[in-house]
Image 1: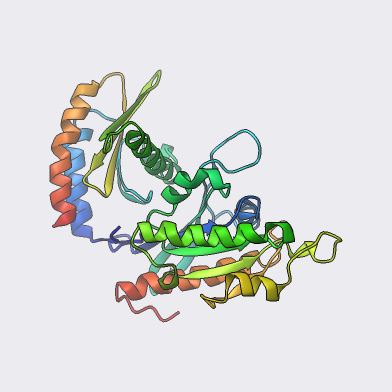
Image 2: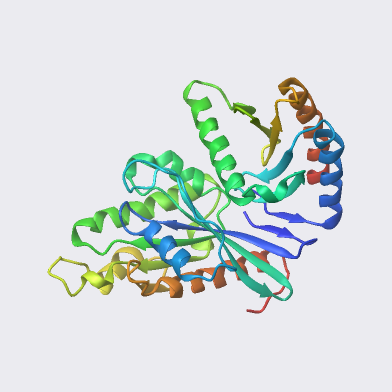
Length: 206
Length: 131
């Protein structure tokens, strides 16, 4: 849920990166963290676990500047992608204002993407939220693998699997190299701030 | 889950209530947050020394996890959570369904006093935020 602080003139929004295990959600946040200027980013919080998989969540607070005198503060969260962490995944979604669905383009992960998107839809419903009403962008990650012998899905196939219903903006990205990471973040931030401000009739135009 | 719009009036009232109760009792820091990990109010003596954003996110997650543990053993929820350290202690208390009050205090303040004050504050804060 958004928090609008009229005394400090701040708007806080929560954006969650969702997707199947090993699709690159944490890598997205790490790339944003390593690229952004010190004054715009907060401390990246990762709950230490054995191995490189996210057990609970990662958090990266960002300061995106001001819109109509309001300081825009965004908190980026990731969820644990592994199927067995269903309960924690749902907890992180509490109070979400915007979503990035990170899809894994490996052919062997095709079903995982579809399952994860459905899992997201069901988890949101439990909070009384509808996926089609929330700001959402889809990121097709790992596009650097397209030119390698590893079998990957085409954008058309990913579109058919994941975006035929929602018809939202999609971005090709490679979280490891940084390609598409900021384009994704810029679009979801814009949509989320607009969603939150429109909901509370603050009439922000951009 | 509702969105919060904080006005200066609400924040001042909440801050005064927390300072008049917990801070006066000698606790180091009291942090009022929501279930999504947003900070509503940060009061106390060494508020700049603590990474409040991380603390709020972890506390919200901690209470979320605890609530799942409660369900596993057939409880509705645990209303409070307390961690004891060598020099500092931390107490988490639920305020209604949406808010969490985090209290950090040293050995010079008793847990019983913190619990009493948090219980009293809980009603006051609910009235402030729910109008």
